[in-house]
Image (cartoon, rainbow, N blue to C red; front, side, top):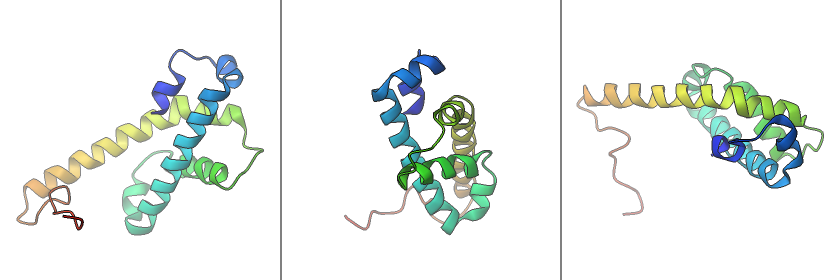
Length: 116
């Protein structure tokens, strides 16, 4: 998790820590890809998440091999944008679970796996 990767670091120590940077960048690529997929199937959910577009853009840039991605922008997003994005995603999940519990339809979290 990004929060774990940057725990105890400052902007200066983050920039000097190649292992932390690689880990954070990998997480941004994963989050960006996930948000891009979600935007294709449920764009209304992504629009409700603050900073989703910026985090997706960072992840997409990193996945595309953009070597000129500003490390200070990655740090700022890791510290300020990702925690808010995580909070809003968790709130949306809780909202969806609550709505499903008041419905006769099965929760998407309770559907049988196609691999069973």
